[in-house]
Amino acid sequence: QAKSAGGNSLRFFSSEMQSAVMARVHLEADLHQALQRDELALHYQVQVDGDTHVTGVEALLRWHHPRRGMVSPGVFIPLAESSQLILPIGHWVLQSACRQLARWSESKRTEALTISVNVSSVQFQQADFVAQVERLLDETGARPERLIMEVTESLLMDDPERVRDTMTALSELGIRFGLDDFGTGYSSLNYLKRLPLHQLKIDQSFVHDLLDDPVDAAIVETTITLANSLGLEVTAEGVETAEQHEWLKGRGCHSFQGYFYSRPVPIDELVLGVLPLPLDH
Ligand code: C2E
Ligand code: MG
Ligand code: MG
Ligand code: MG
View 1 (cartoon, rainbow, N blue to C red):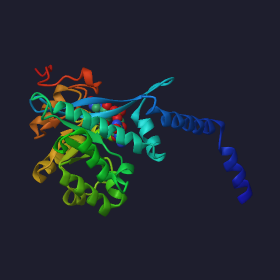
View 2 (tube, protein in one colour):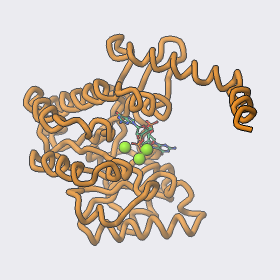
View 3 (cartoon, rainbow, N blue to C red):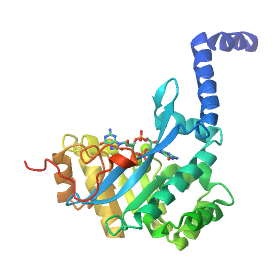
View 4 (cartoon, helix red, strand yellow):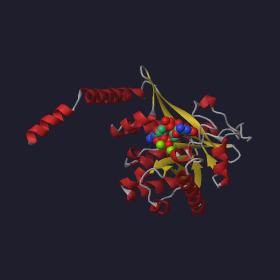
């Protein structure tokens, strides 16, 4: 019985599965080289207030693979996390963001802008993460008040005590935290009470059908109310239409991000100030 099950499971490892595994192995090997070969880039997507005035940007990683072209972060971030490559990559992302903040601090027009950076739980688990961040701030001259670290609910599951200590230490430096993809993970409202959070980001999956799906609408509206009464900033992600913007604004959302305002773009294509939008309807 056991023997035949073994035989079956061997046969079950089909050639398609084998090539999927090999593709992963190849991609991971390529990712090892990506940093040195300068194939990684940060794109920036604006965040706006209710008057479509740009208040900051989210830094989003891009990988220009020499043969495959653009590889989605949805594909390579999990690879980077499982192989620990996220450590040098994440450090590079933070360094690049801090350098950009330091550049922006030199001009009145840009000094108040924030940069949000996605930080993986693997980075958080490093014993010296706080020291690394302190060093980056020192080296670059970036103001910690302008840096927002986006974390996800899954991070908070790892080792809640330790995560809270790390977040507290970083908060004491002046860094602020956003809870990304809010509502998609194993949320516990307890986290909202115990952690030094500044912002909730409503996941784009709830925003997408906001105007057609009463359940999504209820979730979004409740999240906005919750955030406002806890004194947290609430940012709606994935806003694609003027109607979504107006709906969210009308229900007390003050911060917005999505293709409606701008796609993520390279730094030199970033449009700042008050965005000209087709908001008349
Ligand atoms: P995220 O942090 O939730 O980022 C928002 C994602 O939504 C981005 O996808 C962005 O391009 C996309 N997006 C923004 N506005 C719209 C919209 O109006 N409609 C739609 N359909 N999508 C929109 P992207 O750039 O592919 O990144 C995917 C995920 O990869 C990010 O989700 C984040 O979790 C992760 N990621 C990206 N950069 C980094 C990084 O530097 N470090 C880490 N650890 N993760 C990263
Ligand atoms: Mg994010
Ligand atoms: Mg998100
Ligand atoms: Mg996400």
